[in-house]
Image 1 (tube, one colour):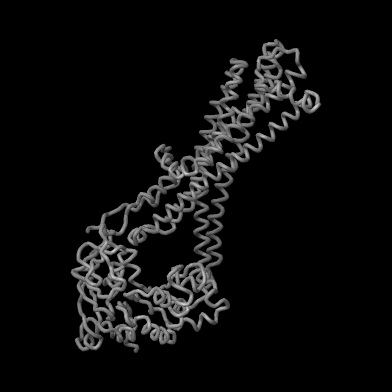
Image 2 (tube, one colour):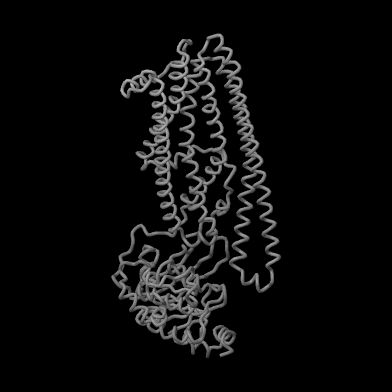
Length: 617
């Protein structure tokens, strides 16, 4: 089973500069589809809001100006029933037609505000629902990637996909809704303007390409600036994290002034780029506003002449001025979405790269049946393994551990000790050879079932957010509170737990900082004992323990290893001495095997390691 060589560099891709990809957007709609009712409601509401946005200026121009103030002028503009509606309101309320028109305008404005508001609410709900499902699927997928994947990919880059990249997609999908809300009034207003005066509309339309070109050039310039801003902010955060995480080293070596100077330099660069962005934004905003004012001036000049010649009504000319914003705003909105679009394309591709990453540990097509409780025999036959792109770590390793036996594995750094444990727990596929549990090939056992039968205690006990009890049971419903407390008592962890203010309900700080190293290891033993696996693995589990705590832990180990097969990777003399056999590895091969006393008497590699590591004893 040869490891496939993969290109992990895709996880270093930039977040900008990608082209629009309809296929990527189409894939996103898979997560949006279950929320189609909410999205459809948002779409209907935006259409209603768009129609109302057109009708509001019609009331002002057609009903009030042309219908009431200047009723004798020629009228070319249809009123879409607003005159009749105003008179119906007047007759029903007893108000004058002018007051009824004002009331109608207020009602339309209120209806527009309400529909526009709920359009945004339902749009956000549908998008957030889709991204919640996408984030769930992405997290579930990443949880099942093998250890080899995380050997090559930085966890921070993986987290970026679940957090930042998904957040960028929110801007993309909600931006589509914004554009719909801008372009519907655009086309309706354009149709009405063409019906009123083709020549005046044509003159006004000349400004749209100017706005479009200016927007394109502006967004192209700001893409570079915004990318520099993101990089400077990233550098600021990285520098801040390094300094705060290593604040004791900084203070001990009197580097405060030097580190502050470096942070100030990065901060100054960020300010420089932020100022460039502000200057560009200010110039662009002033340019668009000036162009809109110029367009309004053209309408007043040309339209005013047409009004004097009575070819169009005054209301029609006023309507033109009110529609200027509806013509320009969609172009500006497209420009605002331009950078978001290209960043979102890159983010979507990065997310789908992670979702499509099919690297996994082999699962059996026909799982072998397992008894309720394994005896615990472990056997390796000609086991070979190398990490992707690396040299051979294990070379034809063979050994057997009888049920209930304690085997110590020792060897120099890089000899393959921990690799055997990782292969036993199926964190990696191995190239050749076999591993057996009670005569059953581990590749025929589902990984979830296999790992339930193997308890591993590492040197660094990982603490999750939650209470002491939660960190022992890990939320396993099969582990009762009584079993948690009994397991802690058996490994002598109950003594320090009782001294905590909240006892078993005491919340643990990040990385268990309110516990000592020895206390964390005792919790690790309690966690494994509560799970009650048939096979126990201790991988340097006592390497960082002081002598006093070691005496407690040694007694806990007797309880932990009783009645189960144990594999102990350790340099502690007492731990190795109490093992039934010792397996000595060298350069990925089994060099020696035997009891502690036998290997000392033999005078080989084990004797040399013993003298080097324990000569102070």
